[in-house]
Image (tube, rainbow, N blue to C red; front, side, top):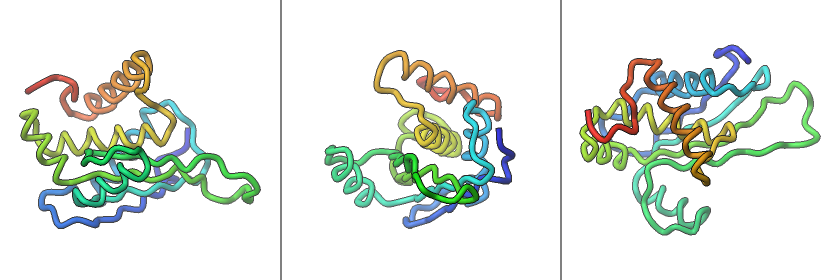
Length: 163
């Protein structure tokens, strides 16, 4: 597996929500997700995390998933590129998180907002690394991995209904 320093995370804050994590915190959770994923990255990998308002995530969800509604997190894996030089960065893709939804879900589930942020960042990053939850077995694998990453880093099980 690559070292944590080789992953470049471009953080874009495109919302006015208060209480969002710092770029450093976002990068930390993304790095933890990669480290705990069991996936091997190229020597230099890149991805972006964009924090957005409800309108932007609704439009992305509508245009790319044909679901015209607000959601908490979307992941857009970059896929494989051919013909790039060997030294070119491995592009993982983009994770888009709606800050207001994260805040609302934390309150709804009775969890600290920082734990909900950590969960959404880990969840979105795992999607970029090829994990999914389209089948029951895939969902169980992804949820178990999310739980292991989060609890190993001091968070509660994200799938418990309340604290």
